[in-house]
Image (cartoon, rainbow, N blue to C red; front, top):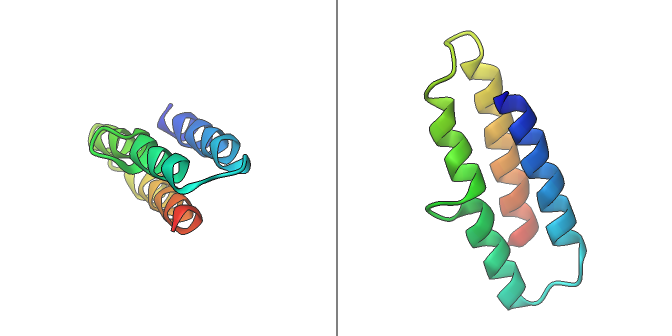
Length: 74
């Protein structure tokens, strides 16, 4: 379930960031995905309830997602 959400967030981010971006929109995207109540932040909260077996792989996926978003918006 969480893996599907990670893929969905990545796809949505790619759509959001594919358009022409000015600084204001870039900041809105950063807040939407990485802010205190952002989509990626919420996925990290959900990671706490995942089984021990799944946690390492999902954690790597989430870290990769966060890194991709960070590199794209900076």
